[in-house]
Structure formats: structure tokens, C-alpha cells
Length: 141
Image 1: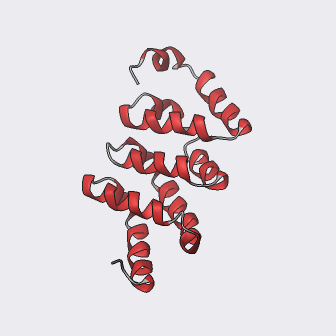
Image 2: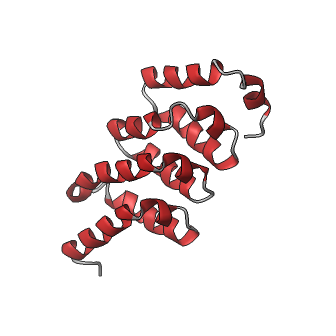
Image 3: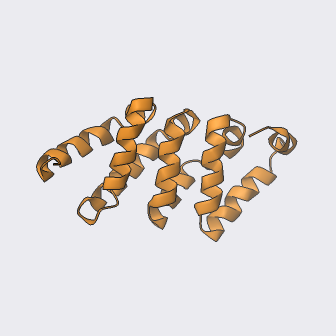
């Protein structure tokens, strides 16, 4: 037995409002995983843009978090191309910093895996054109 649709909508909207706080908590991540799965259903697809906005508003903080980074990775793996592009674009200019941190380096990998060719080229260019390239290559992440 599940929630009636109106109750589900209320819960979804509240979780989206607190996305960053919920995603960055071990128990909250379970809620976020369910939210992302629900957002793939046709009747809830309209919430994907709200979820993407919630992610992009705090993408650096969420990506660097031990739990939050999974939420970003799942969105990159399951949402459509436009959503992936929006999330990935919100990280441009911060890839060097993120690629050297344990949790966010996984998000950078997913960005590279799930980006279109043009965006992937820009991301790689950002990583290659930095003075920290040797540090990036030597980091364990």
C-alpha cells in the first residue's frame, strides 16, 4: 500500500525544498534515491527540473559530501540529457577542486561518462589546461 498521489506530491515537494540537507545524510540519501526513482515515472517527470535545480543550486557541497555525491551520481546516470547537461555545467570551473576530493571525484567521473561529446571536450579541456594537472594525476582519487 502506498501514499495517495496528492500525499506523494506533498512529500516530493518538501524533499525537493530540503534536497541538500536530505541528500547529505545517510538516512536522507535513501529518501533521495526513492525520490529520483519516482521522478523517472511519467506522472512525476515534471519534478525532474525542480530536482535538477535543487542539485545545481548546491552542487559543489552535495558532490563533496560522503552521501550527497551518490545523489548527484544517480541523477547523472538516470535523468535525461538536458538534466545531465545542467548538472554537469554547474560544476564547470570547479572540476580541478572536485577531482582531488574523494567523494566528488566520483561525480566528476560520472560527468565525463554521461556528458555529450561537446561538453565532455570542454570538461577535459578544463582539466588539461590547469597548472595543477600533475597534482590531479598524482592524487589517489
